[in-house]
Length: 353
Image 1 (tube, one colour):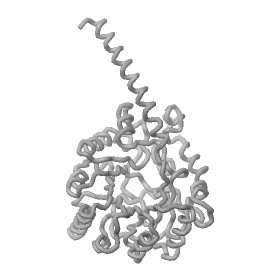
Image 2 (tube, rainbow, N blue to C red):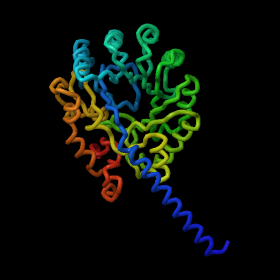
Image 3 (cartoon, helix red, strand yellow):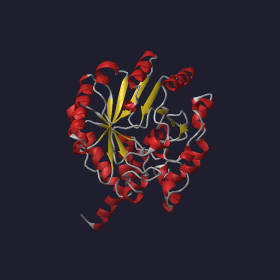
Image 4 (cartoon, one colour):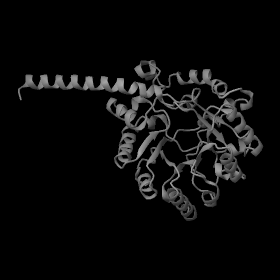
């Protein structure tokens, strides 16, 4: 091919790529704006835990906060939700099934016809599945590499996952990815074994105290291609993947970013202060799990608010200021930052740097 023909072909290819990107941007901008349409209301039942995951954001919180929520307070909380015609909640911990009255909580949920997501490590008594868990409950299960469990706990987890699969209870596995945990094959093996087709990708960010295993921002900047590769492996095996936390767009190429927006709900802005809030064991408000180790973020009792909208708005101004505080100088020149489409990663990085 002559040099001038090659140059013409290159120009045509570049124009085609630009046109494709333009169409893709228009196609997915609405998707970014629609992210987080549903409000996430997350209740901490207890800070007790029967495991000691090195990446856990809640390390030490059992000493900082009230250990368990009272049953009476839990019922009052459901009353507060019901007055607003809210019937779906998420419970977390610690390990929520470790609440001393977890069976009663499940009975209350079923009697009052609430639906409930349970964020769990899966290490709960199998009797919960046979006696009290109904199909209206669903699980979000943080799954580690098999070799990280004791033999007893691995057998218990296997039994529970097999029962969940047999009962066709809705479950999503959480893939906690870090620079030390790149290989997704253990997640893929579990999905195949237990017939699970939905994975939540959670890049492990630090907590305020930085006392958990976590990905530093410098390490995160090097993980873009690995994130894309691992999600692609799971999707090619028929598994739906959703990215849990906001990631900075700059760690991906344009093609990678557009692919992730389409296939894994990549988003650059978190829901804190707009469509997500936490209720603590003492019924105080928290904006985010990653910020729970900093008592300065602890809000008032949720019953001081007449509505969920008021509770969310309590953190709106402070979280908005934090979101748009530039993390690195490159943010100031980024069009996605300027357009309020990417905040530069998890807010926690802005608080610890």
